[in-house]
Each structure stands twice: as C-alpha cells, then as structure tokens.
Image (cartoon, rainbow, N blue to C red):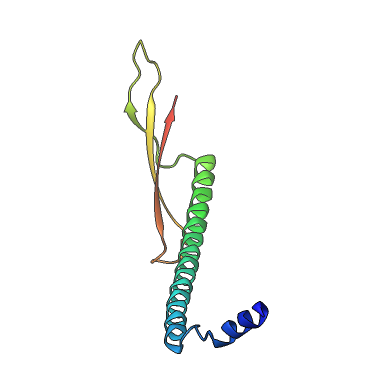
Length: 117
C-alpha cells in the first residue's frame, strides 16, 4: 500500500522547469559562449602580434651581433673615464637597426651597447 501511495504522489507531482526558465538558462548560456569566443579571438590576435614583435626583435638582435662582431664603425664614446682607483673605461655605442633594410616603414629598434676596456 505504501508503494502505491509513493507512485501516486510521484505521478501527481508536476513540478519541473517551465519554458521561461529554460529560455532564461539558454540565454545565459549563449551570452557566456559569446564572451568565451571573444576571449579566444582576442588571445589569438594578441599571440600573432607578440610573435611578430618577437621575430622582429630577434632579427634585429642578430643583425646587432653581426655588426658588433664585424666592425666598430661608429666608434665607442667614453662615458666614464678611468682613474688610479678604477682603471676601467666604459664606452657607449648606439645602434639603430631596422628589420627590413629595403622597406621604409620597417620597424626600427635602437640598441645601446656598453663595453669596457
């Protein structure tokens, strides 16, 4: 008898989600999906820009290393002179290197190199 009463109460109970609740839940889910998609798109664009900047900086640093290894065309400028207590002279050299030498609108990087005797 108890089993019949439980089954009867289950059948009579008509609580559940209404269509309004389902629509609201779907709308919230859709908004969250749009925000997630925008975040992924922004992260992808930022990653492409960072890769471009990193590659340009790497190329100019390689050019700077080649320039320093080949000659010292600009000549070092003494920044701090040596004396009896500190016989080390520190030189400062400024190099402006563009990523693409043939392109006028190419990114240009400025490197300051300090060397000591």
